[in-house]
Length: 330
Image: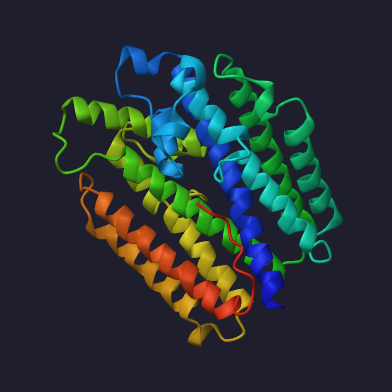
């Protein structure tokens, strides 16, 4: 496969995963703020400020609501349909559409139609950035529901209509790396640090953060079925890091990454990305077995995220040499 095509498919997967993850997170935070969680128990909800910090591109000026409006509504609006914010859902979907347009002979016609329809609906279907204000927070919520449903449709069409060849491997690899990175970002913001006292107010806040985080990644019911402990910060973190039965956990994504790179690479035994992913999978399995249930996981999240960044660089060097470096800006 041409490096240019593999590069476009990889970033198509990353942009679709970014849009879906942002949609889920915005919807969860909106529901928490709508229920007044932040007011009744300060710091319990993950919060729009936490989302802005997680997704980057934050400045005091850009985060300030115009005309004294609601900070939460303005922040959620920025994360959904603000065309000037690279991490917004609209920007991610537009990049996905542009990438899909360049590889239309590789992806299925049904997948292209699903992506194109999603982008046009988000852009012109009455949900646009100018179509709501910070005083109408239902705008970001409706847009998030739309993107969540449409990205699920796109991935479903891809799974049912594309060959399981190199093209599908690079598409999946981009999505898996993006999902892992987003989960780790959220955990690093929501998890308590060693300075947080056990059982104190900080602990209660981070426990609430973890509940919202589960809802944001769509793993609340899966957690209840797999874990007997209440959804507090550290058991939720262990679940999202190590639970291989949950497809969006970091460990499950790393296992799937190893599988797709082994399939796509002509010489996997000598492939730096394959070897690094294999080592990361082994490290996560060892940490799952060795760490006690109450261990602090913030450092592990940071180290794992750094290792994923190295994997991303290895992928670019081995598979995309000579391809345009027009990846998604953070």
